[in-house]
Length: 186
Image (cartoon, rainbow, N blue to C red; front, side):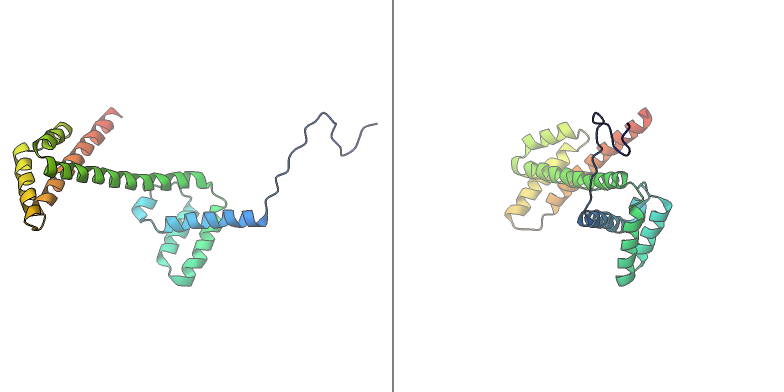
């Protein structure tokens, strides 16, 4: 006789995963915090995100609201985000954060190069010219000497800043040339 409502002994049982109310609440709060981060972004940056129209409208509204209305709107954004896959949104947000940290790291690298130019002189200038061949060697030497004098005389570091601006301009020109080259290859 066949068994009713029972599986045969050789069939695998499906594992039921129970989710506690606390877990569900934590997940909802995480979505709400993600929505809160999206509200804090500028509209030009938000345009690059893969958002549904409802979510985009809710975020725009939340950016206009203040105090209690904003809090309620953030809860609504969390509710809307339950129906949306948060992975691509989180990936885009991480990418923007990483881009900012990459820019900060590049500026720190330029600051270190500037310090090295002022301290070491010609050897560091030669190293800088290897990285940035369009730099003006004579002007860079002159600024390095001037920066040393300003530092020893405890004057404002005008030449120090000017060296950094030169390096920064060269770095931006280099990045722009790479971007144009990639566009041409695409």
